[in-house]
Image (cartoon, rainbow, N blue to C red; front, side, top):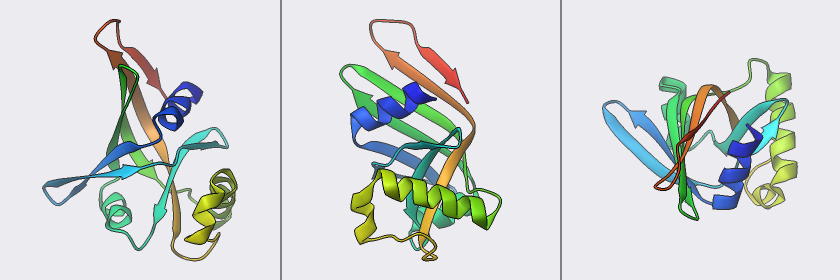
Amino acid sequence: MERVCEFLKKAGTYYLATVEGDQPRVRPFGTAHIYNGKLYIQTGNSKPVAKQLKANPKAEICAFVGGEWIRIAGELVEDDTEEERLKAQTSMLEAYPSLGNMYKVGDGNTAVYYFKNATATISSFTKAPEVIEF
């Protein structure tokens, strides 16, 4: 999982795909953070992506760096308890202080999702794919 997070951070921008009804939706993201043994991303509850993930947690990420690309498929879900959600939000906002202009821990808008049942595949045209499950 650390290799996956490093790849996303090195890319800077990755693309998250969700589903809305029968229509795929893709948008750029930039947060990737490991907390409590889970890979998290961050968004706002007011955004369509949060509503899409609540309706259907299946998602995929794609990023490209230096001739390699990564695809991560799995479910993006929130922690089960409010206490864990707040701890994960705190950890994310500490890792990305620039988000503090838009988000605050427990503000009702800040949302952090972690990958569950995920498979990451790092590929290139020159070597065999590397598969990481987490």
